[in-house]
Structures are given as C-alpha cells and as structure tokens.
Image (cartoon, rainbow, N blue to C red; front, side):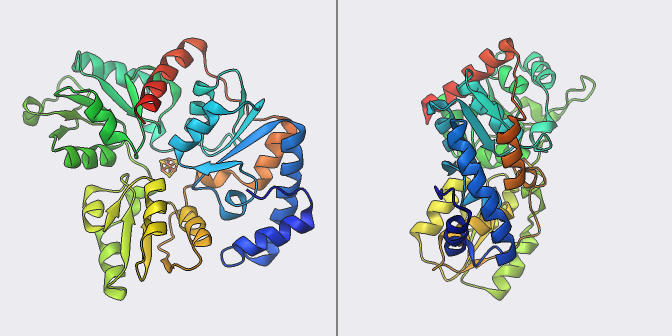
Length: 348
Ligand code: SF4
C-alpha cells in the first residue's frame, strides 16, 4: 500500500515501484485516482482489499491488504472498519460479507463475475446430494453464496487437500472446478468421477470412486497447454514453470511447481532460478515481476481474467464515492454459507 493522498507524491511512489510494468502516461492518471481513493478511504472509514490478480497500478497503490482469496477472507473477518471495498470478483466480496455480515461490503463493478462460479447453482448441489446421499460436499470458494449454503465445508486452492483429508471419509463431492478436483485426486490417490445429473445416464466407473467432481472450469487457467510449456522450455531450458492448480493435470504435471497464488509468490521469492514463468492470470505475473525486480520473469500473457479486469482504480473511486455496489445476501443463505466458510477457516 502507498499511504499517500498527495497526487504528486503518489505519482513518484508509484513510479518507483512500477516504472518497469506500467507506462508513464498511465501512471500519471492512475496516481491522481489513487490519491483521491486514499483520501476517501479515511473519510468513509473503509478498508480496501486487493486480490493478487488486480492490475499493477491498483494492486500496488490503494489496498490496505493484498493476497489470495483465503488471506483476504481472513482480513475481511478481522476488520473493524465500517466499509470493506473488495477489489476482486463477486464471490470474494460475498465471502467477505459472509464472514463480517454487519459491515457494508462493496464490489466496485457489477460485471466482476467468474466463469467457475457461474458453472454451478445451489440446485445442482441439492441434486448431487440426492444422487449421492450422505456424501460430504466440499466447495471451492470460487462459488456464489447459494452454492456455499448447500455445502458442508469450503476450500481454496491452498488448503483443498487438507480440507478433503480433514473429513476422514471414503468419499467426497468436490465442486465445481474439474481440474482442481483432478489435481487433488492425483495428490491424494483418490479415484474421481464426473457424474451426470441425468438419471438416464449411468457410468461403469461410478461403482468405484472416492471423489465426485463437476465440470466447471476457470476460463483463464483452462487456456494454458502442455505445448505452451514445451515451447518455452525449448527457448529457456533452465526456466522454472509454476502452474496454478486450476490448470489441467497435464499442465501441472509438465510444470516444476504447482500451488495457490500465495504459494507461487513465495516460491519465486525463496528460490533463485535463471527464469520463471507463472501459468496464471497475467496481472499477477506483472505484480510478481514488480515485487521481484532482481528476478527474470517470462510472460505468456495472453490471458487476463475478463472479470478481474473490470475492477480498476476508476471503478474503485466511484464505488467509494457512491457507496456502490453493495453486496446483499438473503439471511438464510448467509447463515448456512458462513458456516461452510468458517469451517474451512478453522482448518487453515
Ligand atoms: S481467474 Fe478464473 S477463477 Fe479467477 S475470477 Fe477469473 S475466471 Fe474466475
């Protein structure tokens, strides 16, 4: 965070951090916005949380806290400010509301959705429970509150394995990310199936399974391929490749390291490879490059999340000025969904 309300000083501070990744003309415009956001933040007694996928000019300026969805959920739960401005996507802002329901939670753009969260509904989970009675439901936090409300416990990419193992059951329903589920199945040695909700369809392998998945995908991580990795390795044989577990199991297997956004950041900070390539959302690559100017970061950056991209300094300023867009969750959904998230938080 740059705690500055003077536009000129803000420009100089942002330039010192971001000159390598943000053009100067853009820094001039963005620094004025950031200075005004900082002024309003104090006036309105607000806290700003910034996800690792925020554009560099936002990520490095106004958030009081930055991190992955789990870290930011914890910060949301702990804050004593009146307003939480969530610079991330809707499911993250909803999670903040679940954990601190008395606060006003703002999402700066109504368009900040998520392909993964939109792949499943609460009704889908109810149908799965009917098909597999008694089997506990683990739901990735990248879902909306109505889906969390139907779940026993949530997880993030950082704690998914620990959450699955904490249940001590032979079988779990793990929703909705197909690739994360397959990667966790590989890590835990479990056999996974992807059932159809159509009662007419039956699969032979349904007789022998320990994980039940869902065919949801992140439209960003779905785009990385094994061919991408082979091409980069041809040019840079010593490169260390890090893949988010929302990438396909083939991409994860062809990489050198796989972990949550925070685990990837720590890996870059704590190792010394000749080059690094992050197979994840491209603004995060820029943010890691800005924070590690001594490391050589390669870019395969054709994949900016269109939902995260909706959150800009302009939208954040409007959000604070007009107190928009307020996250509302019906009380019965809120209580049940909060229980699933709090169970996860208790695990770590
Ligand atoms: S990066 Fe993927 S999972 Fe994250 S918000 Fe974008 S679409 Fe959703």
